[in-house]
Amino acid sequence: MAKNIRVGLAGLGVRGGMAMDRLPIIPGVEVAAFCEIRPHLVAKYQTALEKRGLPRAKEFVGPEAWRDMCAWDGIDVVYNCTPWHLHVPVALEAMECGKDALVEVPAAFTVDECWSLVETAERTGRQCMQLENCCYGELELLALNLTREGLLGDLIHGEGGYLHDLRSYNYNSPEDDAEWHYRDYWRLKWNAVHKGNQYCTHGLGPICQAMGVNRGDRLSRVVSMETAARGFAEYAAAKIPPDDWRTGLGIAMGDLNTTLVQTERGRTIMLQHGIATPRPYSRINTYVGTRGLMADYPFRVAWEEEIGKGAHKYFDEERAKKVRDELMHPLWRHAGKLSVEVGGHDGMDLVMDLRWVYCMQNSLPLDFDVYDLAAWCCLGELTERSVREGSVPQEIPDFTRGLWERRDPLAVESIDPARLDISRIRVG
Figure 1 (cartoon, rainbow, N blue to C red):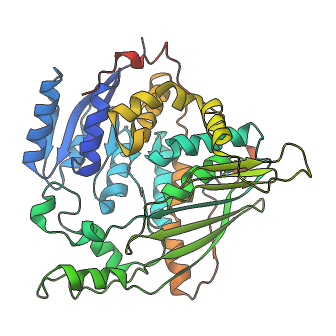
Figure 2: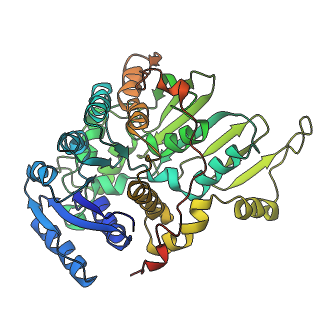
Figure 3: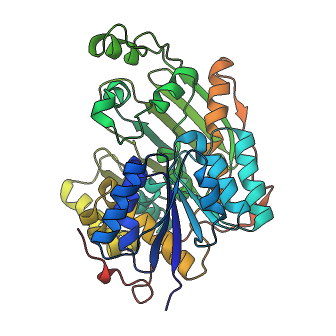
């Protein structure tokens, strides 16, 4: 029998509430504690547990209550869904208290914060993983599978991003989102004072996964530039009263940021961030190899059958579907259909949770560790610094201190149905 994982959930806003749709239904997981500042959300999710016939969670309520929850010996893992400014403090406290830390994105923003997480994880021996759900999306895992199968050749370039119209989220009324993490507009306030790409990991993480970053290669330098900031101001002027404090709020972050990253082995990554203009959602998701490429939004794929033959057109719809079906990552093949039924970002959230639970229950290392977290998240500060210095390149620290040269790239891993029986999961 796999060991039981007792989870303390910090934050019951949007991400925490979504986690409550998933964690209680996973075999071997107990939501043992809640931490929140809003009592009505605690009551809401206690009721949700009771409706599933599960024990009530221990309650920790108040601005500093996360410290007490981290110290409580009734949990093994802290699942951190707090607002951005609390990600690092909660994760550090969790590890200091002997708990593993799972942190929502972005897990950190500055180089110093990243080093503090790395050094604390090393000293305490605890695991610290960023909950980068996009690494577990169907097509992101397909790209990993195609890469490991060698069908794209040597992966030399990737493109990723977070292109998402968030104007209404940042300028709606408190009555519209009383239970949402935009309630006090902390994300809008962050955009008001920061430049650069402050939310890069959705696009970056899956590319690093496929390229073997921190496992045979590493991110070495970054350069960033951005457009003027106009979209939020125009939207605010049109949609909210002139006496609202947000109408005159200056926004530092440009409407579209473009960042280029180079790796030690000569690969390149292009990242974009844009949340202030009307546009369809996209994470770009392009993987370019020496033999072919895969692109998303919409899904396209092509590779040459033999060197020199070329791949001048994408595969037609029928062949692309065949590639998608026959080369589906085994983790998605095993759990994807169920995960889509449960919901949560097209199913990737549950796939992610099933995988880390499986790893912990079977004493396996997590797919992503604190070194990955640090390498990805330090770009928050470094891209801002590059923009403010006139797009001057910035050196990216080697958080592994040379370990990247001796580690093997991530394999194509799944979960053993005999050890984590997802057939026991009931939707709804």
